[in-house]
Length: 410
Ligand SMILES: Cc1cc2nc3c(=O)[nH]c(=O)nc-3n(C[C@H](O)[C@H](O)[C@H](O)COP(=O)(O)OP(=O)(O)OC[C@H]3O[C@@H](n4cnc5c(N)ncnc54)[C@H](O)[C@@H]3O)c2cc1C
Image (cartoon, rainbow, N blue to C red; front, top):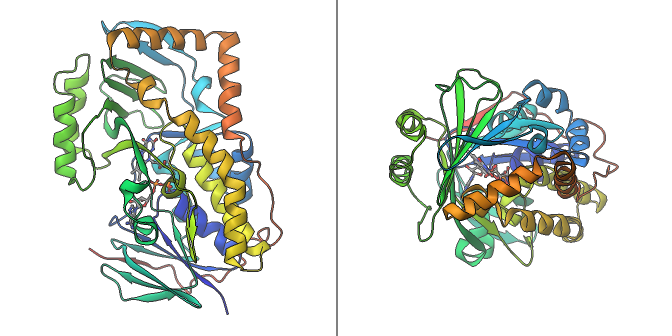
């Protein structure tokens, strides 16, 4: 009989897991707490081994169609005048795409063989000898062979199987926010970065000439991000950036109407193990590194390893989860090391630190050090080699749904 897997979270890791588990012959249900796919997020880039993965998934061409093709970034000084230009190639990798576009591509790529349930969440997991009994906030209880927690830094599956978030989440003292605003600056495939102590703004125009993607990073000691309503999130951002100069007042005008606002702490997740019985964690739920930690690429690579090890072990989840962890642990640690300094780099806390960061940035923009920087970033992205697993090669091995059908709870 076809084995069933419940994946919690329809971000990046969840749909990627749906793809590979289907290839491995599993029937997958994805439950997402949001009422629909979440469109937000900044650009994410892929390099080397991770590009091989996109090709193996059959989504590389589609990802390239939505490539940001970003040019240079202008960095402003404290007086809001340009102090340096960073070549686009320094950040954009081999192929760069907005996170929201990637999430949609992965969802569409999997929707004809995956049952997607929106607006619901797991409330309890009870393991039995041959499965996991799952209860949901809205839907009827169901039994699955395996459960994958791909529900991000505040993972509900992790809380149900391993304990409260506070035990595993380490906040790094900064917050991050992003939303879309009208392109009143007339940017065209370029971006601008501006800082005041403890606050960083990056605005860029990617694929759509009428839109600006606004990314905010800010010192956030003592700020609690959990359980804020969208209205409270807007109020928090408006308050934190209220007296910020340059174009900030104009950018904040778009905040009340921004449907894609994303606000969170910059946090890492550290656990000694990523599985408990038939429940396993993937992506940010397991090893969140924060910005700059190659989290998107590694979440997708991890999905392939997870499914590949399950097939290689003939469905023996104990062996498979151990092997999966063995392959992912080191690259996840590399990502966490890289991600640790992101807040201090993007939102230095003092004027002196902003000037110091800009000096480093200027050096990284030189041909010699720029090459070194790109090699360092490449190394992090390539920390996990893409490896084929026999049994995952043939496309559409699992059963397709008779008809595409998403369930939506309001
Ligand atoms: C809207 C959005 C915008 C983002 N923007 C940025 C950004 O600008 N910069 C950055 O560095 N990282 C950002 N991230 C995080 C980034 O996507 C991840 O670090 C990375 O891609 C790994 O993906 P993931 O699938 O593990 O986690 P995520 O992409 O965070 O996906 C997790 C999914 O699980 C869902 N979920 C959460 N709790 C539950 C629950 N209890 N039950 C069911 N579903 C649940 C979430 O709604 C989300 O769709 C963003 C995440 C989201 C959701």
